[in-house]
Image (cartoon, rainbow, N blue to C red):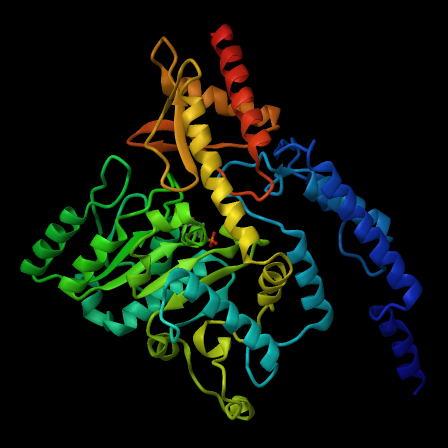
Length: 480
Ligand SMILES: *Cc1c(COP(=O)(O)O)cnc(C)c1O
């Protein structure tokens, strides 16, 4: 008994009393308030010469530490280093979000710690997630009885889609080497990774040519499939992109559906970046046809501005998703009787999982959908504005007109050495850090990318970005 009492006294520290709890709360809130207040001035990229090496001097120890010291370590080594995706001037890769409303959702999810994997365990939590999926299905134009799950991100959601397609076409054993997947060179690399994890590394990936806007050419796709059929191959899967990461291009989704149907292939759309632009009229126009796919992926942690760790998969035929992801276990027998909603655990690789629905549900409930529609329209219009404006600045040339919110462009100096110049420009911009853009290679050329997708990016941030691009390119030209 004495030992028990002693242990209890110590273990109760895990359940802090009011005074202590208030101190932790106040200091954490103060930290986050100061962080948010600093954002208008904060850099979008923080060069950290020692790569946050001081983190190593702050080990996990037997004794707990003071919250001030812990927050200082976090601030110095995490918040002040590397990319700052919460900045409105973060315009590289596909920006992430960090909505305040979502932070409150995560806080409530952690404090209440409700189990959102199985309907029986918490019907309300599972209803929230399934309602969000039905809402997304409605937005996309999927049938009401399609099903899916909230994933940690687009990579896992794409993996699940590929597994469902694999099982449907029974791509296994000796068939694998004969099976063919159709993609473009701009497909996200998580697709190759997913094929590898799904045991399909030996499948052939046919790279379909693209048009001038980097969109899959349907005629070429049709020809390639025909050729493979004649040669006795096993075409089974087409993966189209509803917004490629590289250039934001949307494949011709309607035309691809017709070809998938004609040849009886699984039609998957990777809309991790772009699908949720369907919420605004500008996106809707470009994304026509994605509702015709067999499966689709979208990333609320991109195009709904949520914190990282929120992706989503929808599969048209819920039975197929269930069959690829469900096994029963004796110790789960109590959970089977609660019918009414499908459980995420039966539709996804996870059992116990983050209640990630709450960070999506809360902002949608608090702000309402129309705010997201406006923000997404704004992002597309900002990309178009940048596209028009940057080409009026001496030396800059642009790639294709943006389908969504990614613009490709580069500076072409008089000496013609454009690759070198743009590499220097990138380096200079990283050192400066006020804006963060990224670069890529297209048809062998070094090209700059602007991806508008942070909810804090507005006209001022784009104007500032154009100014910085202009002044930095002038500076480099002078020094050449
Ligand atoms: C970001 C992205 C992915 C990968 O998603 P994660 O959430 O990073 O795992 C897949 N496809 C496309 C088109 C993307 O933009």
